[in-house]
Length: 210
Image 1 (spheres, rainbow, N blue to C red):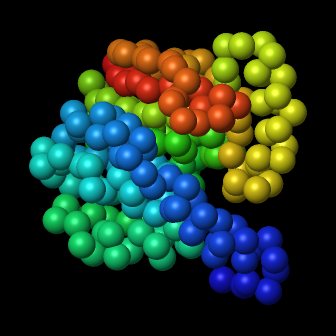
Image 2 (tube, rainbow, N blue to C red; image 1 turned 180 degrees about the horizontal axis):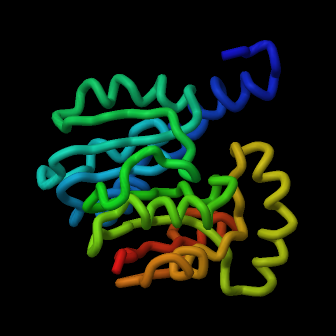
């Protein structure tokens, strides 16, 4: 990896460390426990990041495949992978193009990831493809607020957010994106306590592959 370019150095070296620090804490831990509590069988996590979910996967998971395109994330995640009792396969991949066969996974997990995937619609189609019939996609994401005044600021700030947070969008309508690909089994939308509202409107839900 070439780090002579300041953009590459920030994206692949500094940003993963900043993200690991920012995404640690009891609030995030609570959400991770809630989202992962029912996961079981053969699981794919899209946007694995620095591996902060690993501590919250239940014993019902029999195998875990994790993907993330940023090598800097993988470097931080590796000690967590090594310490985990789960059988884990880690790959450096983008969510839009998965090499896995159709109908492979019982569950797919995404936590604060769809905001930064360049083509979320394509990634969701890939998630549906690799899920088994009846398989579930469980997610927690931040995105577009229902408040018009806040939407204005989310739209204004997203170009800046994308530059400083490796493609993260503040203004994606996560419920619409997911439900266009798979029917939603459950969905909760709320402002997360302790987060600025412009980045703190959360979508937590489960979609099912028919």
